[in-house]
Image 1: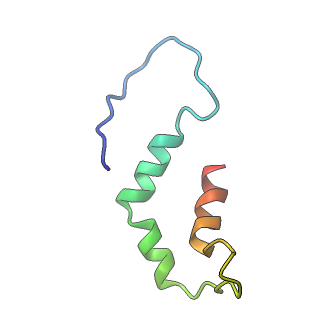
Image 2 (image 1 turned 90 degrees about the vertical axis):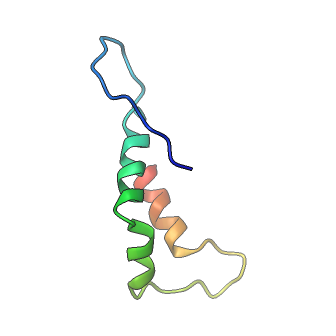
Length: 62
């Protein structure tokens, strides 16, 4: 789901996560997840574990 954002300067305090949506949108436009899938990332041995791509994106977003 793509959303358009209006970027402008405002004289208000923002949260530390203020730029996170822009960063994640940039990763999406760069097809970051598809690029990670092309790499040789080790696969979890358990079916209960997170996919490595989810862990990497979580590290970037957190």
